[in-house]
Length: 162
Ligand code: PNS
Image (cartoon, rainbow, N blue to C red; front, side, top):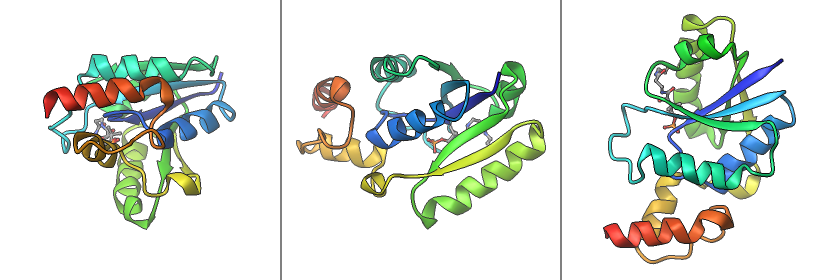
């Protein structure tokens, strides 16, 4: 069975993430959406539990997709789950250097897994979780950026915090 891991912060999951998850699910037998720890992003607005709940709410249509979380090294998780691939979405050239560096490090740490980059769909080129949080916090409309099932939950939560 070919298992792929889609790792990320998912704070929160966006239409861009969902597009990549959907496309990965058509290539691999099983896709694990992994809510991972990014030491460079210490200011998450949603708890890991909330992020998992939101992902679960939007992956119902994909029978071979599951969600998990991990606070350790991605390479160790890949080894434990016998995953053969890390799937990441690439938006613009600005993503490339960071993603390339991580792909090389992960390859060194877990040579049995390949990093597979899927190019973003053009409508999601500019989309990021940070942008969604900023727009929602300032009262803007995020309905075009996040799955409809979780839109109001994100808005309520970020308004409550503001
Ligand atoms: O959505 P993000 O925050 O850009 O995703 C980055 C993430 C979480 C995939 C990356 O920080 C990661 O893999 N974290 C797990 C810890 C780890 O393995 N770090 C070394 C990466 S080479």
